[in-house]
Each structure stands twice: as structure tokens, then as C-alpha cells.
Image (cartoon, rainbow, N blue to C red):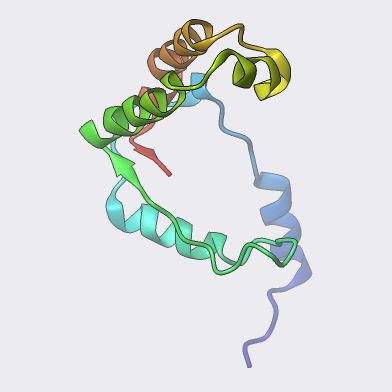
Length: 116
């Protein structure tokens, strides 16, 4: 069995971690190999035990638009009762939701090379 990393190495990793926000996205492509390695490592994250095994679908390039468009198509068919309950009534109807999604598409999601 492999030995655990030294405590100083763990501390250094913890202290050097950072959050990445949409304003930090460069829009540059992340190599597929790196995406696969990160997703593989993510399987080691703690869970509540009812979500394993994890499976991921990675959308890149034009597929990002297709995913967002499919999401909009799914919600377009929802009735008024749905919108009163969904997200605590945050959106009055599909039109408000669509505006929100399109803003997120422009300002955040398309700044990512991949959507997972």
C-alpha cells in the first residue's frame, strides 16, 4: 500500500487551493486528457453514499450550445403551475427563465471550454 503524503505536503495543497469564478475564465480550451484526469480524480471526493458510481458527460465546442438549447426546450413545455413552484418561484414563467439562461450562456457558460 502507498504511504500517505507527508503532512507538510497536505498542508501546502490545502493552503494553495483557490476558487475559480467566471470572471477568471479565459475561454481557452482545456485539453481532453486534463479533463479526463480531473474527472477521474473527482471520483475520490466525499459523497453521501447514494450517488456512486459517478458518471459524467462532457460537452465541448458546439455541443455546449446544444446542451443549453436542449435544456431550454425541456423547460419551454412547462405550465404556469411549474413556474410557481420551481426555484421557489424565482422565475415568473419560461420567458424570465430563458432570459436568465441566455445571460448565463453569454456571461459564464461559454467562457468554459467544457460543460460537465
